[in-house]
Image (tube, rainbow, N blue to C red):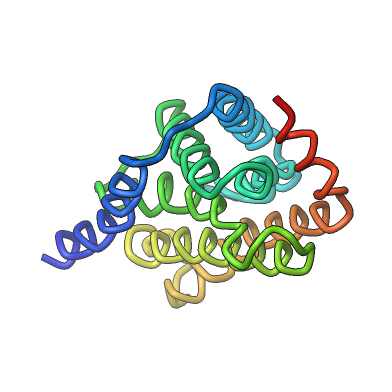
Length: 198
């Protein structure tokens, strides 16, 4: 019963995305960039700095392309790139326990990275705070999946909530902060000008 309720809650963001995208028209260049950045994100996720048991860990800045898409183009582009990346990850060997777990591990986290422009994209500080918030949403989704579906992997006597927190925030969270650090030094205004050229 609980898993069914959780599944319904997880479907809500996907339904909102579908409703939003019904009116959105992608330009050709935007579609090409979405495809390229999604592929880059997936490829970077295959290069680990630190690998944890049961997957996870710190990868080579795999979140950075998804954070950049919405800053360079639009939130819709960022959400779509995240959806594509998550789907590729799932199809290339994702671990499936329950439909809600699939959404919490492969759909919502990557799509959340497309919200990096949530506080605006005309000021670097706003972009940094938006990116940090997107990272928090990403990591929280993985954390919830860990609590609800992977608690059995916690060491004996360790609270599953604490285990999931340590596991996910020391992996996804650290990688996300490193990616935001890179964004802080990138010339984002210049990159946006180049991205807007036809």
